[in-house]
Image (cartoon, rainbow over all chains, first blue to last red; front, top):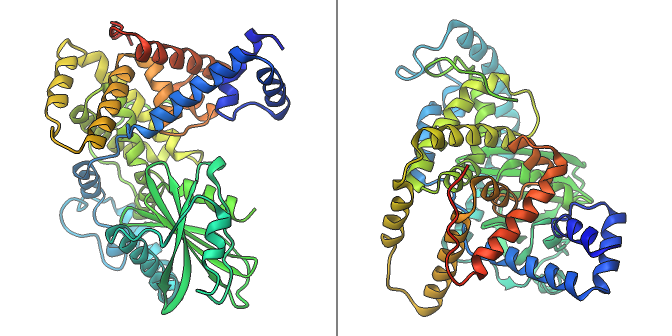
Length: 252
Length: 188
């Protein structure tokens, strides 16, 4: 491979966008070419600088509030009653019909899943927020799965699966003990850009395998599933699609 | 999909659709604001444009049939930002930035000061880039978009994303290395 060709592939390589054959070709060239190695190092350090510089500009609270106001009433609050007076008074009759049609379903869903799923969701979100507020993200700080996993030994009656997903954009930060539904369980902490993701894992006790289900409340997303004898609840303020991606990675 | 001109006022979304909007689109508010902020180079304008884009998205939502909601929203944000730039782009854009920069808190421990200096240096360098270059870098490095998503959001062929990124990064490097600030016209 010529340096010219390698240079054109370098950015695709850096971004993990080359297919395996071209990535191997590039690596083979770069190993024997000081110029291309230097350029790759320079680009990697530029990327690291950009990522470390805290340049991401998340939505300020005022914007979030404005958008929330435009979306009122919150669907789960308004579902059981007729539309509230005010902003949504103009709701067309068609919308009201749709609303009435969804009420029995929503009520059914609430009674069926409300107790276990709803309380668990609230508990998981509370635990996540508590860890952020108390500055108690982790009891063991390590990006190494082989350090985090043994740390749980003797503290729990089970061994939570611990994997590092740094290469996939979810670097492991560490782990801590947390309490959900009155039992002590493992919480693994991952980073996603500047966000923190809590992954709660505990034994499923004969629970059937369930596919990931995600939901959103109060600006937080969560996703939960059962897999290989373990239940997983994942909570964060990242987009649900990113939690779905994490769920896929954890189920591999 | 390019949004069509929308009617005034909120759309008649059903409750279920509104809930779906809240689940699929609202979680990408940070992404919307981040892209607007970097395209407009202004926090306050970004907030206005991001809000407008979200409301526009709410009106267009009945036309959203699956696909990646973040890319869908970012396309709308990008359109709104470019429309804004075309009608507002004036000399005071850069002055706004000086004000903002001087408005930041001054005193802090040394390490924080160094980190902030580095951040400002990178921010300045990014802001000196032409908008099209800044756009691909922000989508890739800050937003973590794949090439396919970038192609989708910026309406360019997939094959040109890699070369745009290569040019943008080389240019950013030059600005950062250059002893004197490279004066780049703020072309679109």
